[in-house]
Image (cartoon, rainbow, N blue to C red):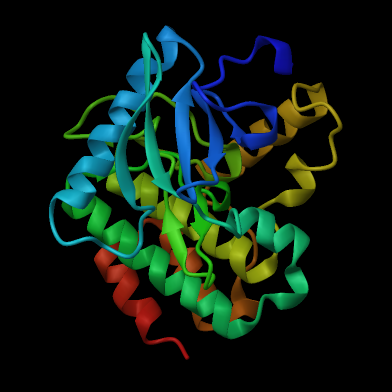
Length: 264
């Protein structure tokens, strides 16, 4: 794998933080920032889209709910990456998996409020995330949540280029505020239960392309289409908010954020 990677100039295997669909992320220890660089020319457009979204997010007063954008990085003569804030505690998904004992009710509530506020701000700028999962929510040094990974997102109605995982996928138009809010319901479920919605159908497969996983995803999609969702009553007020996100009861993320703000 490592032999075929197009490393940004000045970086190598020891600097690798993450490897994704459109690019890889390396740590610049000198500045304590990360460089996200495209794999090749075919992925440059995705990184350029992401940079345009970060530029819009940083054009006004900086919002604390997003990774900070620190400009461009010339990865090679023909490839240009972006420089972003380094999230030393990685992602919410990683934290829930590896450090679950440290996840208190107060921390869950803080993340819920921060993510809903960030999503509301994102939509106000005509941006649809399109791939909102705990894997794309990053954690700062103080464990504050930051939204990121916009390489497949939509700005001003542009097409989404990624398909979100089945247990976060809205059974309607994916390029919509409602789809992001639906995915946010699944994010909340993951945060408050430590598990993905319908985790029993989509986890436990050694091979992600396995027939069992594909069948599980198809079943999740079918249940959502029928309006069938995991039980949430045991989560109290947050559970009701999750269900309403899935049911399409919120017209915008601001409504959802206001309801979360009332939870104690």
